[in-house]
Length: 164
Image (tube, rainbow, N blue to C red; front, side, top):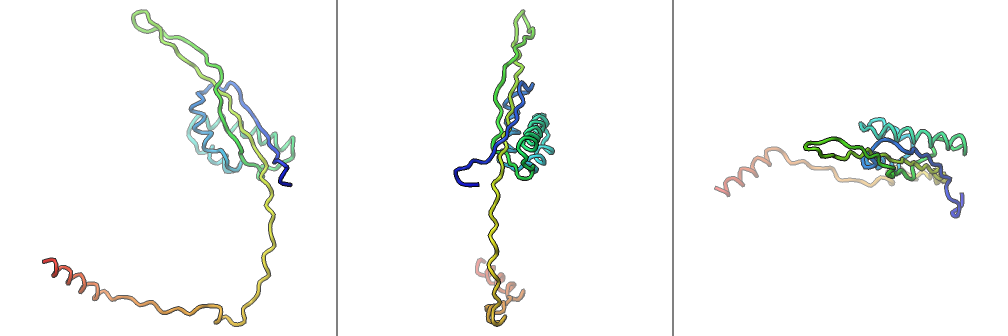
């Protein structure tokens, strides 16, 4: 793939989902930019209702990529996941003294875009050269010295005497 080529993108969209867009956006933020297997794991352990809807849309996008473009699931990542507001159903509820309270039943449109991860060019490792002697390769270190516990006790005792 050259620099001028764009990675292939696949998208899936669920429209008129009976859920508040604000609540669905909270879950969409968790999966944005992740690989598909990682995003599935995140959605599986997210305890919000929107996670189930996003998982369905993600599955649809992966199926589109595999069947239409022949891209394996492991090579895909979520390039964009966003939630737009849909139409709002307006209902009313009777309140005290003949008044009315409006109830807004919100809907949303969930979109997931997947892109193909570019193949990383794996460079061959440099040829291994063995050092002439193993002792010359390792720097010599000075042995560590430890303070004895009696030395610590005497220093703390001296500090106490100076305070008093």
